[in-house]
Length: 128
Image (cartoon, one colour):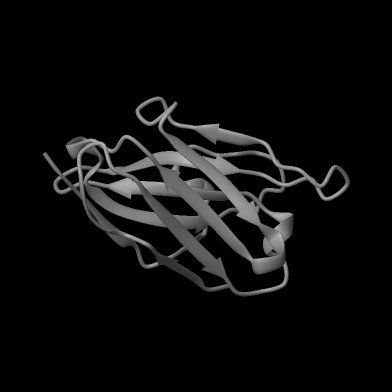
């Protein structure tokens, strides 16, 4: 499995960005995907996660408290891609953002140990 994150950049406070994570492999649609971030000098923090139920053709999402109401996670299984729409960005959102793939089909884990596969990260910088 390979994950390729993109879409980061420099944006002013209050602005928006959409991150994308393209996954290789045929099992993408079966498993939970997540986004984490890591600011300088800090640990890796859960941002959002999304599961997928093939029978229902829909996913359940979970968003971390620090970004709730501003960030939205979604996925396009036909494109093997997961997205993170980030609105109302704040300087404290500045971090390297990582996408990750779980081996769980329904449990959206909040810890880095729940995700064995990781992308390379994309930098998001929010200026004040």
